[in-house]
Amino acid sequence: MAENTEPIAVDPDFYSMSPGHDANLQDFQSETTSIASTIARGRLENGRRYQATKEDDYWGPSDEQQFEAFEIGHMVFLVLDYNQPNPLFRAPIGDSPKHILDIGTGQGSWAIDVADAYPSATVRGVDIFPPPVSWMPPNCVFEVDDVLREWTWREPFDFIHIRLMYGAFPAEGWDQVYKQAYDALEPGGWIEQMEFDVRVSSDDGTLKEEHQLWGWGDMFIRCAERAGRSLAIQETMRSAIEKAGFVDVHEQKYKIPLGPWPRDKLLKEVGHLECAHWNAALEGWAMWLLTHFGEPVPWKKEEVQVYLAKVRAELKDPHIHGYNPAKRVWARKPTKEELKAKEASFEIDTSP
Ligand SMILES: C[S@@+](CC[C@H](N)C(=O)[O-])C[C@H]1O[C@@H](n2cnc3c(N)ncnc32)[C@H](O)[C@@H]1O
Image (cartoon, rainbow, N blue to C red):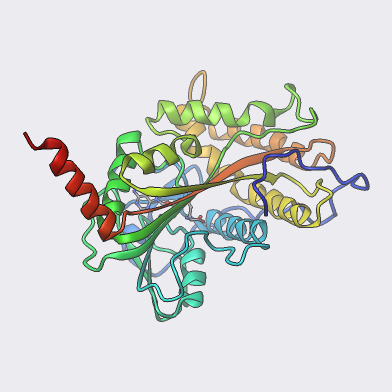
């Protein structure tokens, strides 16, 4: 898909969303897994399960409902880049990479697909909650760890991938993660990150101030700021990646339609899926941030649920042509030659 900053054309024949599309998902049912470990049991709050690997909270739940949302989100990205030679990522890593890392792997779908596509590689997915997978290709490995801790992987990576880690770390945490990624990559290895803008926009004025979706993103950005983490990572990731020393930086902007309102067939499909993604993810996106950092004071669980019911109604409204901007950035660690040349020029500059 070409660099997508143009308005998305609306399908003139579009009147209503297809019945049965509403993916309001089943209520969270408490996990009764037999794995008797604290990490796998997590921590329950407001009917959702959260990670218990690290002491400070991560805002998103790790439970069946959220894993289902991750899975639909994965499909959204695959369909969005369906016309690309490789819809999984853009970094030109060649045909026979050896070591790949997926940070914050979630459900593990990206890591599994990449392991299938690159049998030459060992693909590691790391997360603070164990991915709920019953089968994975033999060259895929999942690990439970906090990437803010010191990395101990011995083999250098050819490629490190990050997707939807918005709000995971404060700015200095991001610097630390990019620095560790830089150090853990082979010279010439690639990093790639894909992030959403949580704000909903429309190009044709159909999203109006009276809609809940109008202020949705800004409110959550403010909640996350109060929690000490930025949700607006798509605005800062490129410069933070450059600051860590990466070169050859590329960027692709997207518009992800919220509902099947676009005329373009591919974007219509993306919009269908994105609506299902929102419906599955909504409560998980909102509950922790609003009950801990809601404004003007933290909200009650029931208040969050009433608000989300209004948002769900707007998601079904065919007259609102909303979309989320999103951005992908990929960049390279300098090659050995580039690193040597840089060192040499540094020596010349600093010699008396
Ligand atoms: C919104 S999910 C995205 C999952 C997956 N990357 C995807 O695109 O579907 C973010 C994931 O990051 C994980 N995460 C958050 N903080 C982390 C940390 N410090 N170390 C490792 N994983 C972390 C969360 O547990 C969650 O599974």
